[in-house]
Structures are given as C-alpha cells and as structure tokens.
Image 1 (cartoon, rainbow, N blue to C red):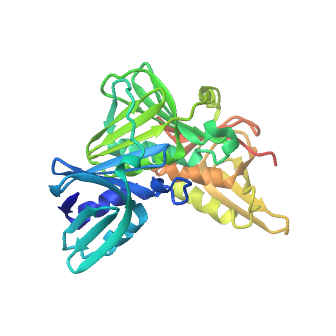
Image 2 (cartoon, one colour; image 1 turned 45 degrees about the horizontal axis):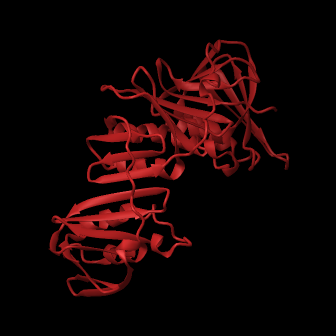
Image 3 (cartoon, rainbow, N blue to C red; image 1 turned 90 degrees about the horizontal axis):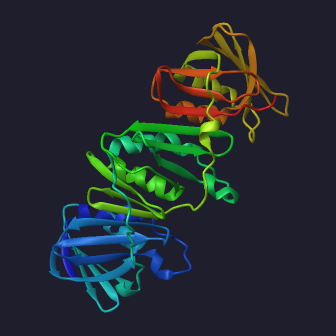
Length: 366
C-alpha cells in the first residue's frame, strides 16, 4: 500500500475513530484502525466489536492494499504534522511509514486480514432526517440515560418510529424521562430499538458534521447511520424498554411559567449548600413566585425566590436540583412551562404550546 493525501483529510478521518477504539482491550488489534486503499479512496475503519465506523476520503493511490496501525499513535503524529504538507503512507512488511515534509515516522502494524469485519445487516427502509435535527434530538434527551449497568435497558436511548411516521427518542434512568419527537416527511416502517450510549454519542457527533440529510436504518439487531462519507454501525441492547407512555403525566391541573435562565441561576446558587450527593431542593410554588430553598447536614441554608406565572394552590415539592437543571439546559426557549399535580406526582417540563421535547421528573420526599 502506498498513498498520499492531505493532512487535514487524514486527520479528520482518524479523529472520528478515537472514541470508538478501545484504549485497554484484551484483543490488541482492536487498538488499531484498518486502512484500506482502493479506487483512489482511503477507507478507515475502527471497531470495538459493538460499535464500528468507516470513514472514506479521497487519496492518490500508487499501490492498493490494506494494513492496520495504532489509532492513537497515528492520530498523535498526524495532529502534529505541518498543516500545509500532504501525508504519504506506505506499508512495507509489518510496518507503516509516514512521511510529510521533513518528518519521517515508522509504526508497527498488524495484518489487515486479522481485523474484524464491519458487518452491515439488512434493515427496513431508512429514516431520512436532517443530520442537525437528529443531533438536536439526541442533545435534548441524551443526558437522561442511566449509568446503572445492572439495568442495561436504561443505559441507552429508545429510537422509535410509529405508525404516524413520527420519530421519537426516549431516555430514562428511573427518576426522570426525556422525550423528543419529530414528524418525518417520508414513509418508513414502524420500528423500535434500544441504542447503546456509546453509539448514541457517536451518532450525534457525526450528525453535527453534516449539513444535509442522513439515513438511519433501524434493524432488529443493528442500527446503521449513513452520514456523508461516514457509516456507523452498532449492535442494539437486547431488552424491553419500559412503557414510557405510562410515565408522562397528562392533565396536570397547575401550570407555572418561569424564565428559564433566571430559574436555572437560582437553582445553581441553591445547590451550593444542598446535599452534595442527593442535590435535594425544596420548591415552594405560590402566587407569582417559586421559592427555592436548600440545607445540608452542617446546618447551612439558602433561600431565594424567582418570579413565575402561577395562580394555583400553594405546593411544596422536593426535587433533585441536578435533574431540574439538566432539563432546563436541554430547553432552548426563554420561558419554560412546568405542569404540576400534587406533592408526590411527577411534573412535566416543556415549552408552552410545543410538546416536541418533554421532560418528566419524579419528586423527592422532603
């Protein structure tokens, strides 16, 4: 294999692989990426056996071939090379030579034949959606994925297409739930699958780089994203997601309208003296205001009010302040609507008149 290409193109392609490659893997070749040169194109593949990515970039190919090389070392080298100089890669025996300007490197390699195949299973017709829109949906829900590995089905995101051609992303950790939905323009099959956290985050990164549409294939055992010159595949979490529809409150009689930034600032200040593990805050909803208070075991306290549009009965509800702040951080509008029922029922956060993104938070006993 002997190829030449621009330093920036190689850097971007190798950089996409960094979060896929396992740094401490029992299989040495999985710390490498596969470089395959053919048809004036360099294909770069990375996988951890669960998630895989293949990036394609144009190159001048003097000799076709394939080899694997350390993902980290190649990235660190290319990152430091002169941005104005092209990079030449040549595979000779069990080594890869890297030349650029006056720089010369030689890295050890492993045979391409030993690298795991990036399997792309058959799937129904793709979900076609703007890459930026899908990235926004993941940003609006990703924070609520659980870190509890004993409940694997909560550590990913539910991707769902219903019979009305609506794409939904749902996450929950058992204490809160985030939902984002988007009406698709083209017809696609009804489908549902749980995508692991690592794959969800990689899908978001790829979508943020794309200006146009992406294709999302939701299969029974695999999800596949085609975004420009990149293809990402991932195994799914083989489990049943909770019936999230039962969690979303309907018809909460009391509504509060509050400035998102002002409310978030009060929460942030109050959490300074809240319990550092439970982050519990006491919210007193009364006429035209929310009073936020906190205390800890050292008898330290805070108390502050924020103006709010509320005319219902007085309610005092305990919340994990971090959960509230995460939801507020995912909302882009200036005013947030909070729908309440009583002291022990879940609350719903969204933008007034817009249910595209909804957030459910369970209260805490205080």
